[in-house]
Length: 135
Image: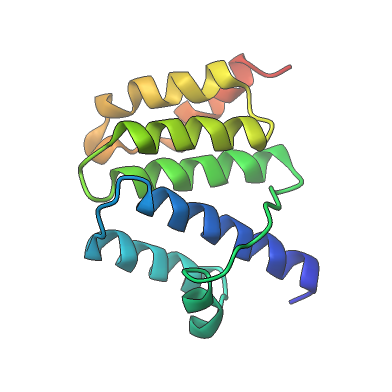
């Protein structure tokens, strides 16, 4: 894997870790979810462990489609422990803006997520929301 792709993946996981820590509640469920994502992203266990100790520069995905997927991962991460804290919502909104996603689209997703089982907004609904607010 080239360095640019590796840095992007580490940055994405780092953001997810920061979100997991936002509510100051260390959850085994959240850690297990993060580890599974790291494995799916071909991030070594050593690199994964370092993410809890080191600062990783923010490297949002280049393509909007990938940024929307990352936003969906953030929503999943926030809901994995069945508890959504205000700090987590604030952090997700901030990251959505940093990633260049339309704030109204991210707010809409956060508003409706509770309408779906396990707060998982179906991919087609997510895409429809972001298309509606596309610049």
